[in-house]
Every structure is written in C-alpha cells, then in structure tokens.
Amino acid sequence: MRAFFARLLSRDKTEEKNPMKKLLIVGLGNPGPKYENTRHNIGFKILDELAEQRELTFTAERYADKADFNFKGRKFILIKPTTFMNLSGKAVRYWMDKENIAVQNLLVITDDLNLTFGTLRLKAKGSDGGHNGLKNIQELLQTTTYPRFRFGISDAFSKGSQIDYVLSEWSQEEQKILKERLETSAELILSFGTAGIQNTMNNFNGK
Image 1 (cartoon, helix red, strand yellow):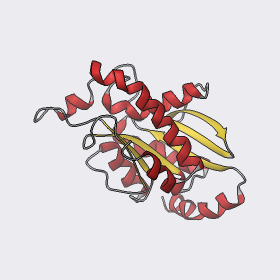
Image 2 (cartoon, one colour):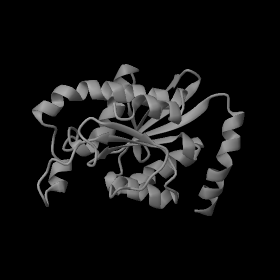
Image 3 (cartoon, helix red, strand yellow):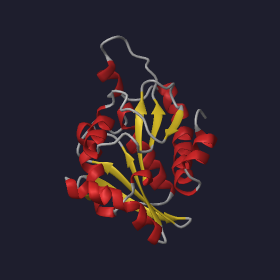
C-alpha cells in the first residue's frame, strides 16, 4: 500500500518527461447484459459511444474491459471495471498503478441522482455524494481530489425505490434524448484531455 502511494506522488515528474500525456478514463457501471441499459451504467454507455466513434473494441483485461487511442498528442486509456460498482476502486487503483497515471489525469464517469436527466457536470474534486462506486474509489485512493464527470439521471423515484430506479432502464422519453447526450459526453472527454479541466468545465457544465 505504501509503495502505491509513493508512486502516486512521483507521477507528476514522470508525466513531464513523457512526450505523450496519458489519461485514464473510467466509466462506472456493472458488467453483464442484465445491467447494460440501466441508468447506473451510464459510465459504460458513454465510453461505448466514444469507442464507437473511434472504431475501437474493448478487450477483457484484469479488473476491466479496456480500449485506448491517441488523440492530439494524448493517450486516452478507457476502462470499464468488471469488479461491479461497489469495488470500482480496485480496478481504478490497479490501472493507475500499471499505466503510471497521475491523479489529475484520472477522470471517473458516474451517474448522479441530484442532477436533472442529461445534465453534464465536470468537477476537479468532491465528495462521493453517497455513490458506492465513488466511495470505494475514494477509500482506495485515499483522496477526493480527482476529476469526476457526473451525468444527471434525475431523482424521479418514490421514497424507498432508489435502488430499483438506478438499476432500471431508461424511459422512452429519455432514450429519445440519450444519443445526443452521449455524443456530447464523448466531446467532453476529448476536451478534458486536450483543453484541460477548467476550459472543459466552462464549455460543458450545465449544457
């Protein structure tokens, strides 16, 4: 554990020497067809959209399905953890360590009940907000200071039915809008990697 955190602290210098900046883009979700089109799997869905645009295929690797590509001098490493949501941190920590990724070059994509459907919000840090995936990542990385991209799924559920809601599929009305939202989300990721987090927040947050 100590060795992991020592490497975490030394990554900024490593990145400076590396001509191609590497970014780890993590879409949160649960593996398997049962969860494929559920609200909780929006992280997977967004990475699938980006992969389709770039004509990529995910391959099964340790703790995650993985794909990568180069764009404007950056290497984007996309992972969809196969550890199930509550253990997402295990995949994040493993791939950060394996690929020597600096914390500021990590982007975690997650659903958010507190945002209206389709709202995009990028932040440089923050709490887990009660999200089990973020909670596990925070626990294993021992920090809340990492970029996260929240996709609004709204809170249109009755009291006591939150779990059923996030694990249910999109409504017909949501599906009509979802494709455009996924395309914009893919643009946000590319902007994060090339234009930086501040410019991307200014251009995409709330849109």
